[in-house]
Length: 315
Image (cartoon, rainbow, N blue to C red; front, side, top):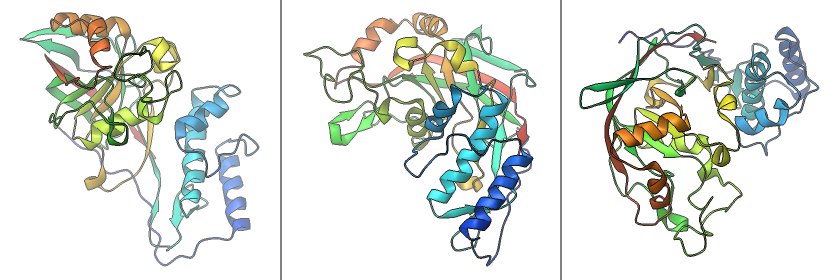
């Protein structure tokens, strides 16, 4: 599998952090150059996720090109919260003046046609249509996001919360596998008497229920991909919102040893999910109920996930 050259990273040596005035001026100049409004909703150090910032602007800005530009702004501002300062080129300089980072975006299905995308069970492949059956993106710095029939494992809600007495993984090894999650928390639709009832936020989603947590947890466990079963009620939005970014994804440039293990991350449509579980001899509706119990254990779906999708990078 060919690899692209690493996304460019700007390095500054023994450079002092700019003053707040210089920082603000540089940021405004960079924003004007990129056609970013500097009067839009500004994130603060209380902002915890890029998605939260995206939500704050999505009601007044177009979701495609604008969201991409604002995502870059969020990363610059969030870096300031952690003690780094944006340079005039949009990179960030740490307080120590030792290093700086820039942004890497990856994969757009509008320009990338999969050469392989399917579920495979016992040699029988079920082709998938990108954007209809499945939506994926990548944060790996590679020319091709490739997965060769990796085993798919249903992990329920995929929550590891020892402080709440909850563990969906039960020690199951996910290295090199595809973790399949339910969206939201284990108690989202739980009723009184079920193990998960009142353990999390009920109808108010905790961080354990967010797609960001699911992907992070899968990566911590060495999974090669993470896919979330979409349902409008649990996600809070329809499939049209899931696929609206058009495959674009953004991340900070990191050293190779810190790169995510996930070649692909994304969602499976509700209809495609039902078919996937049925072909594996499983009833998704019953597994949803089982996933609300403390004794839930991951389920090997006996199905492989195959993908080969060209990736484009932009810094």
